[in-house]
Length: 252
Image (tube, rainbow, N blue to C red; front, side, top):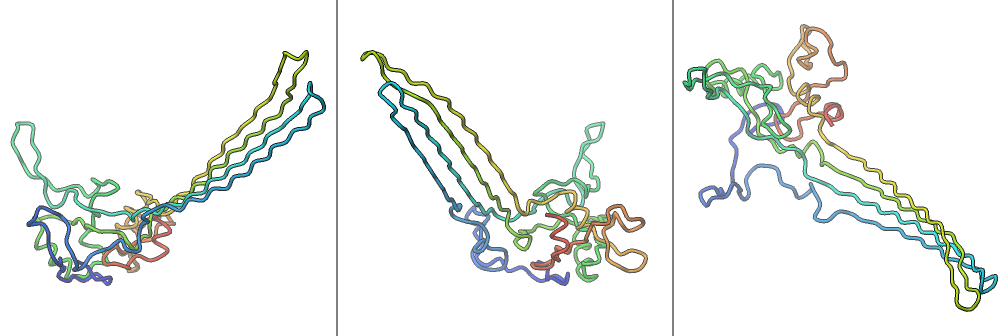
């Protein structure tokens, strides 16, 4: 695993359940979800009803109904995570059907694939870079980092749903055997959802690809020679708690 300053340490797996056919383990290092995620979403309901009528006579009884319902819910999901993906070299088939190796593509990315870290990343300590390079195929210039992004914050959703309903009408009886009921009904439903900490994928991969510019400053690679995105803040993902708040604001 990584310390926040970019050096390596030996990961403690605790009790490893893989021999029993499970990918889980108990104890040791790694992220836990005690403070991340909810067992049950927060749910609040507000309901108001108004009913009224006035009997002018048996033949003419105006009435009205009004209803308002508001439902508010808040749900906290787990943080993003990253694992797997192409690393080092991958096996492909050429035009003649022969299996050959080619360098993995660092831009083969998805929302959950391992984070590509270039070996020239300035957040990576030289000793750690040398150790990782020795474990990769010759010529590889990046590795993929598996990570539970607990320090990115949870992915949250707040929903508010409002329902309005108004009914107005008149009813009555006449001639002892006739009854009528005439009404107008209007209803409306409005919903609003707010999402928090959903990762902006392109911003994330811009930020994680950090280098030094000519002045020795750590910048996003897209801004190394000329500024492509002035808002890009390089992010350090090597070690829990390493990302700065400015970088998290940029990627979320």
